[in-house]
Image 1 (tube, one colour):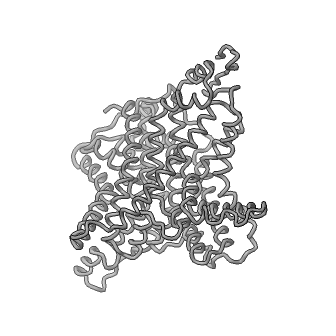
Image 2 (cartoon, helix red, strand yellow):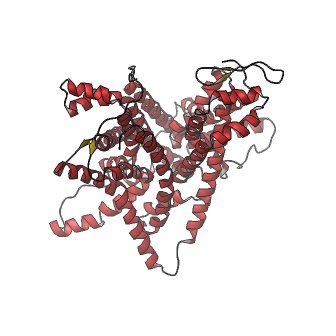
Image 3 (cartoon, rainbow, N blue to C red):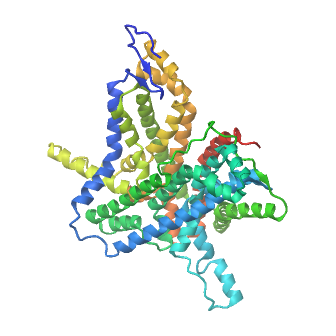
Length: 562
């Protein structure tokens, strides 16, 4: 459709994809390209520094052991989350049993439990000196062999329990959205329920399962607090230890390049799992599968399975944290809480809010610019801005340090004495920069999803009436997309509160967040002192988990009979 041309507003053409052509604004397009450079700069700095120092012999001697351990951890956690998340998604989608409706959302809550918090609860309960081993040795004898808790298998189990909701959410949505006719046709041809799952349902759900696995593996690759608790040395742990231990830039950047290679392998594996097959269903979105009612022992077994996973991954740890916090309060009854908690919580909330607002503003600029037009260059730059979320935090942290070191050199060469000094790397600005690079992607996705619901005709009408880009954003786009913008603010803020690696790498002297405080207390086995701040982190993280599930459940409920 073409709108009549006027002297105030040139003709505007709407493409089939809803992007305005022929009305791009150079300044807005340039802003998107600059934001993309801003996001890519830390990763580019790591690659340049790491590849330029390949002749260095400063790598740790056990680097190959780190690589092997990282690979085993990725494979183990990926397998565990696929079985656990995919199995539970099929259970609540394909069957009816007692408490099914309750469990369908309760099984998402472990996503609000950071792995490093579940790790220290697990070790305090099951490690040597914990109540479980003490009880077993009192019953079986002091010399009884018990499995080692600080090990790779234990780390895989704990991380699988906290990360399986990524696969569960996407698999449940994929199972619920599949057309019933395809599955029923397989059943009428003699396929049993399990064969229908294997030959029909799983192949159609493969893109969702691959996307969920990619998210799980990226989170696994980024984590280093959890694996440190279990004495597991991964490449990400090596980056942190080398940098904090010896400040060896060459070794740290070389290890960061290895972490980045793992990230590229994960993304490549996700594309390989999807394959070149097409996954469209004839007739569009399906009505969903008709759940089969379970009766007798099978029904209660299904309920018990869901309750067990929920209890182990979320309810049990929360109750244990509450018990420790209460015990600490009774021990120090005159003092309601450690006064540092208020300060550290304020630090976390302040940094998270600033980072959330900054990322959402940048996301609005990107999406609004795409709405105005700009061509393939702007579209490619917009996609590049999402790259930071696929890069482990350790790489971004090192990249931020390298980027501002290079900026210092440029400013000094230009005659500015001292360069940036410690303006960025010696203050909270370095953390904020890293947060924007890391969390711009979820903000962009949320804002872009809301803008996609705005009819292009509204944008075209406003432009034809002479509205400029800023007025168009403030009077048309932003009011209509405000829900997605608010969700983006909440999601980024809570992710920033939970973030640990970036703060540990970049925090200035004397600056601590609540997540860092929990990590340090748990590392010193001060379980009671770590309980209350850990509960605060979990409580804050529950908010976006609830919002995510409500959006997913809303879409599912429209398509699946109750």
